[in-house]
Length: 146
Image (tube, rainbow, N blue to C red; front, side, top):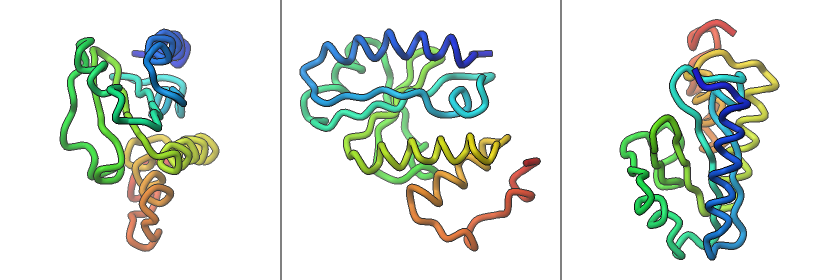
């Protein structure tokens, strides 16, 4: 179990490491179930915004032991981010300020409505990030207990 407090401690260390790179601006935020529900049974997710993606943030991650993850962009928007993993941590790297802002808005909406399941979080994310029509998504009752 990863608590929000331990994830924030790790995120602050990770943010300090990334801010040493020649990238400006760079922002790191805790997202996912740790941010929304206060803990996670599996991992913690860090959303990283690096406007000048070409300067090597991905290269830095790969050279320091992170592995790039494939296959999870369908739920959160094709081509809008790259995902990396190291141990119990995921780094979700975005390079567009609107994507970053919308992702953070999704986290805030999930907190506000008190989502309980991953499917609920993904549905809210799809509405905000991809403009999915609510009629095309299952109801919260179908996604699990609210």
